[in-house]
Image 1 (cartoon, rainbow, N blue to C red):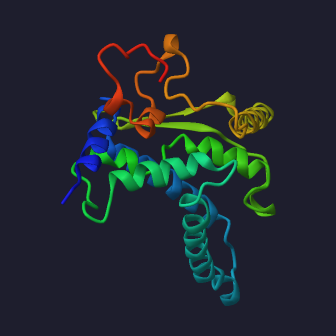
Image 2 (image 1 turned 180 degrees about the vertical axis):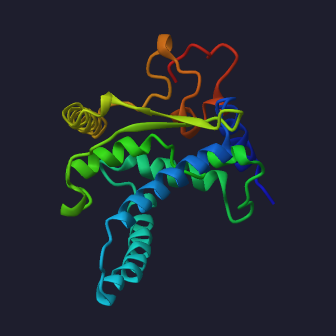
Amino acid sequence: MMSARQAAFRAAFRAQIAPAYQGLVHVALIYLIGGAALWYCAQQIHGATWAEWLVMPATVVLANIFEWFLHAQVMHRPRPGLMGIYKRHTLAHHQFFTKEAPFHDTVRDFRIVFFPPYALIAFLAMAAAGAFGEAASHPAAELAYWRLTGGFEPGSVTKLLKNDPAEIAAAATDAAARLRRLIAAFENPARPYLSQPHPGRRPRFAEYAHLARVAEWEGPDDGAGNG
């Protein structure tokens, strides 16, 4: 049976989901990006030996070990510099889903199940910095935004930064630098974690407001507060 606390958290989280959000489109976009990456990698395989093919099952095993390690050491443990992952997973995902109520109700609940597609930008920056090893540390050759509509026009692909390798590399470098500044700022114990940092720039949908449970404690006169 779902607890009152979990029900309140679910209601608060759902209230912050953008009206235009489409859960199935979210999932499809992730699979399209992943599928495109796998297809591209498959095109690079030529004349592989049986020993080289064994890399595939070994990779599956290692990927599952890494997934377990990530959950055990990062997603369920507060680590300096990785608090965003911990908050999204333990403090949000595992309050939305519990052993008493582990199921989603509608596809709009996929918003808290899957990472947002814009995480691709972060992965590009990490890959460029060598976070995934030497094989993935080469400069990105293309950056594109895939928009899926599900309507008469199924979608479109917009190439960003004119596919200019120099501009893409500069964007990745800038994103990494901004990320480091944010990490340094929020690792400062004296810095408060305000759910609404700037009343005049209050976003319509704020993920941190879910974690701070603003909808539960906010009164009728607190709409412009800084929590």
